[in-house]
Length: 404
Image 1 (tube, helix red, strand yellow):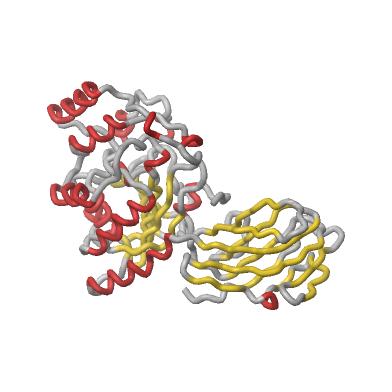
Image 2 (cartoon, rainbow, N blue to C red):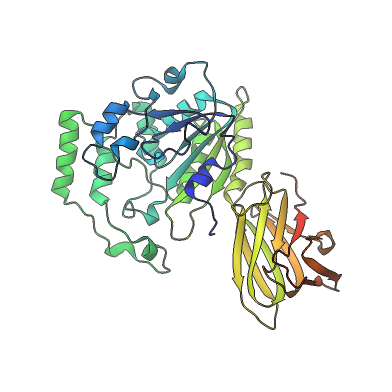
């Protein structure tokens, strides 16, 4: 699914940045939320000075753009850093979660500082499209081990696994059908990897590594397992899958109410799993001339170009069936633009597949035409219509008959 969303758009989707109180972890020099946009505090594992020293020889990092760290999260818990009674509406992080030595403890400490219903929103790389391609996905045993050992630095296992399988990959090739990654080779010789591990052990160094490796499905499975054993106090709020020729997905987690039972937490989480399954809108129609059709979806923000999907279609004698894949967000209304120019068209039927488990046929009579549609006549199946001669925005709006 190709959308006009950037990763930043997805991480911040639905968050009240202007009036909410938030945390951003690991902003470095490109914060997701600028301080002039809202009340946000920056969190990192080291002070601003230590971070600048760390990246001093890295030419890709502009020292002057590194933001000032408000809370140093390491020896103290996140709640101690922020103040025990200081609660936040949201917490965001990009390219951080895979670097965290103790992922379970990290998520629990974030939960501790969020208000009930607060959102933790992260981007997560999918190993199939990154330099982690040769690595196996992380398993629960390793996460549990790191949690009970209370790791503050990547372990020797993390470091060795990261560097021994680090490879170069062409993301376009990785998305090609039939891609065979068996020809990929690690970039570092084993003896060099061992030297890195030896240095880390001998000098108690923090060696930045991808401690955790996921695919979309393995990550969701990990969350499911953590919730099942009582180590995750979140449910899934929103999910954006990896888009074509990209490498990361975005997950938003909502803090569950405090004081509810384990059984209630489990039930709420299991219900939220549907939010990882995209909606699908299928439209069967014919139009002259050909061009592109567009679906806009209103998830509470009205209709806008961000929340839309466009598909091209060619001229034919038979009806065209277009499928629009929408992110699994709550839908209030949909808008279908069959063309973007003056045209004659027939719309036979529209079907919505919500969260992969509820198919809804939209009654044709429920479509409300926009002002650029001149004629709207029902047929035995569907309707036919035409636009005004200078129309550039013909569309139909309809509500989603479904309670979330």
